[in-house]
Length: 546
Image (cartoon, rainbow, N blue to C red; front, side, top):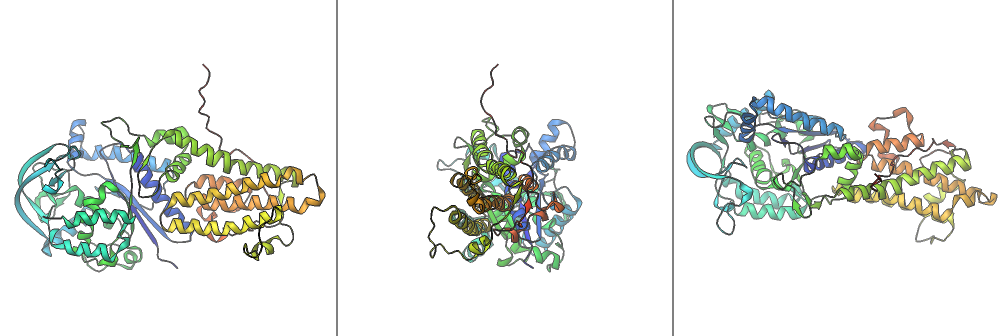
């Protein structure tokens, strides 16, 4: 059996409502998790919420409620949205959980005993928005701290510091030895540049006198843990089998670790690309035990980053209500290349839904079932010798002619290549490209309908075998398409299987889709299809007359 697939996302900061970036990250992780389950792998998908920090404390005070009550209310908004969007996770991290607090305390104790933490009184410029001390490297070309840092004030106070600087050369070596530490590769160059300029250590505490809402230091109760240090530990504290006390790890933990961690580009540097690997190294993890960081880009509006202050944020909850969760999942996966930025457009969401789903895939499903019912009473049969012809086909040895049967054999053969390309793209986290391959099978199917013209074949008894081959190929192509789109649109995939009346004994179970069944020719001869029902009704954007 293959190694279990452990995937995590950055935990969402509970000081605001979920936005489209949160939704994309969770959908991307869910698609990859579902793909690996489709491949027959054991999957553990961890996500959750980050509930501590100064901004949470201040927001709770403004609302006149305790911080825990404040974050509980916001946490439900995230969990409710993920349920609406069909996000199927296995572990849910909350940084106020007693088990997490215990784990953070144990890790702080281990680092302190190992000499990786020290207490010092230092002064520096502090970003209230980012809840961190700044150094000169954060200044812009004008020598100022830019607006991205928000209010910056000078503070002098005693705190605990985690030794970062002494691990600089090790981190550079990690980037050389583990090309998969940061993906896509162009993000690795950005991180290397930041590490080369790295100076100073990380302040990992805040005086309890000014910040009470945090995890208390076990060996010094006058201090609480810096929110980023606290949040990063969730990848360990909620990992099955992790023991924060002993350096050795349980088989349950080592079987899954290291994970693939999906994060936004804004938290690669310094949190996940600098703090996190050095924390792991200080805890005894070696280079091969470092996670892989899959860094996604931003969804922008007209090239500009979404911002509450600019009033250009997008509410994924409202979009899911307006267009359906699967339409939103389809758009967010298909319209962005993993790792890069993209412009969000509600018009493109509608356009891609109508083009890819209503006009292409939905149309193919309706045509196939309608013609099968009309010409073959809903039953499909592969003509004698068709499977053998497909299995023995070689494009080089058998040039494609305009014959419908030749076209069917060629298309059936090409499906094998398409499925292989789909797998390659998924393994490289290029989910948009993989989905495009699935859609290409539907395009080929609609082209075959226009080429073969089954309504004409049905009128000619001598073309009976060609008609059978056409309808069988179209139905079996839809079966394969359903399997391929199931990680992105599981409900639509179930809908296709329902209308094909295929694997009904496992309806609404993920095991209904099997990777080893993507080969052409899986429908048995004489299989009876169901009745067509609009799976992707067009979204009409034409203004109604008033």
